[in-house]
Structure formats: structure tokens, C-alpha cells
Length: 402
Image (cartoon, rainbow, N blue to C red; front, side, top):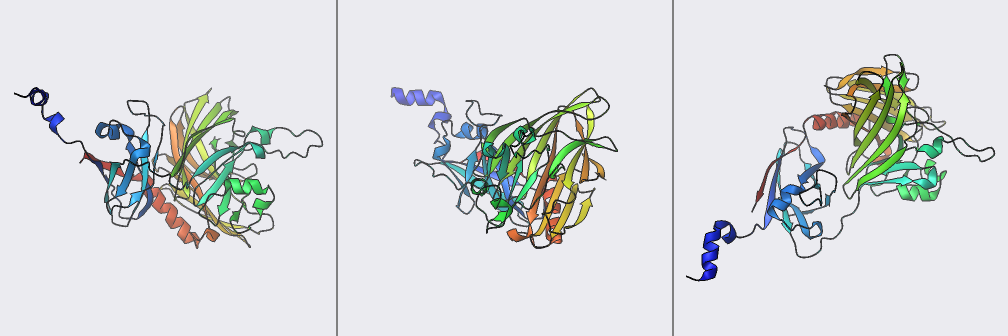
């Protein structure tokens, strides 16, 4: 018998089988509503089971119609066995009633071209160490220790101590953070065609900042201490901000690490805050806040709120005289939410958190002049749908080689 044939027969059918050409993924969910820009996350460890030598620059992702989809590969844990990557990410717009969709991942010989970036996050040392982030819908920033540092006599330096989150309103789908910082501080307070910073954070919680609530008083931290970018597009940005311990009353100290997950096509960002409690019980009541009056100077702001404790969301709608209207929102899992409160400057959503365990919630904003929201009803409907989606995530039902 031919020696090569004998070796193949002894090795078994696995070596005789043709290598897989592609990986087919089936994704399902249980809601009847539309789910635009849903992120599908495929563990890289599942990909290398089929393509052991897979390289991100030689892959292609397609939907069922054969359309090539933008994708991103992260290197955040858990990593694949080779320690290379964590997940492969892509997005799909589920139509109303579409509860299942299939996609393929294929190896290609050519180098896959880069995809347009729709998310961005960076440290901004040129403006008193802001940290700014955006996607194709909305932008935000938050403030570092340089802004909180005292001003030397005669320096004219701005001083602001706050852990509140700011909002920048966009008219355009492209990225504007670098463009606006390069224009200079005064320019981005004027709408020159791309949008503007019309939001006033001050010492409030801004749009989604946190604190500790003792039933009567809100205890808040200072500006962030350090930052770390974990992923930066093209469809998802992830970063972390660390806050030094602050006094939370009755001898308790609380520190926080916030992880931000920013996805293209969404007005709400996913937040995972991990609090470390010292000197007290491990469970605390966290308050997530919205500034009661964030409007621009001279805009004669009128604000109204709406909420659903049962479904885990709270919104505020601020009508300004000439700038348009701005909706803000907080979404928390109903089983985590413990009620609502307010203080002099903030509307507050209360949630239970345990020391060392991440608390997940969502925060964000939407502007009428972006063209996405014409009214308060539009904004509330968007937030209510986002809350449903958060409670009923998509699932990978099947991954198979073909």
C-alpha cells in the first residue's frame, strides 16, 4: 500500500476533511421592536477554533445578503488562547419583528481595508486635561485634575471641581472633538454649522455623573485622577476613568472606577461603575444625576421630566429659546433601581451597588437640531426602547463552520 495513503487512513477522517471556508453565526433576540446598530460580539477564541491562524487584516464579515460589514477586533480580556485578541465586533440593524439574523466570517487573501471610524475617545491635555468622547450622534467630556487645581494669582486659569459629565451637541455624523478643540474654547460655544457646547455642567452631576445618597444628602467626588483607553473604534470605544476616594458621610470613604462603552449609532452610552467602600457596609445607594437646569446663558430654559420605575428609565427635556431642545436620560435595570430623588441642582436616579461589584447603567442625550428627535415624545420613546433592549440583549444562538 502507498505509504502516504496508509498514513492518512491511520490519521482518521479529520485530516481528509476539507478545511472550513467560513464561519456562520446566527444571532437571535426576543423583542418585537426594531434594534438599530446592535453590536454583535463574537469571542475570538471561537474564531480560532475554525481558523487557527486567523489574522484580523485577512478577514471579512458579511450579512445574509452578502453585504460586507465594518468590524473591529478588541484586545480586552478574555483573550483567546494565544493571548492575541478578545472579541470581533460588528453591527446590524434589526428591523421590527426581525428576531434572527445570520452572518458569515470568511478568510480573504487580500488585506481588508480600514473602515470609517464612528467613535472616538481621548485625553485632552491641551484644555486642562479634559477627557472627551463621541460617536456619530453625540459628544461628551469630563474634567481632570488640572481644571480642579487652584489658579496662581494673575493667571486667569479656570477652576472647576466636579465629576459631572458634559454634553456637546452635534448636527453632523462625522467626528468633531479634535476639530472643536482646535478651533479654540470660545468657538465651540457658538453653532457654526456643526453644533455647539450648549450644556452647563458646573458642580452638578451634569448628564449622568454619580454620587452616594444617604437619604438626605448627595456626596460626590472630585475630578477624575487617571484614565485608560481600552478600545478606540471604528464601531466601539471603551475607556476607564479612576476617581480618588471621597467622603460619603458617617466616616465612609468611596472610590470609583467608571468604564465607558461607546457604540456607533447610539445616543446612550453604557456605564459600568465599580465602587470601593471603606469604613462602612459594602452596600451603598448610588445616585446617578441630571442637572436640573443645564441651559446656556440667556436661553430661558424650561425643563420637564418623565420616568418609569417599572421599566428602569428617567428622562429630562430642556427647551431653550434659540438653541433647540435637549433630552437627557438615565437607564438602570429595574431590579437595581431603588427610586428617584432630587437635590438643589440635580434630578437623581437611585440604585443599589455593592463594593467591588460593577453597577451597569446607561446615560446620554439627544438634540432636536441633530435631526434625530423632533419632540419630547420622540426622546422618551427612544429611551424606553433602549431600556427594553438593555433588559433583553441579543444572543449568539449558533456558531458553525461551513
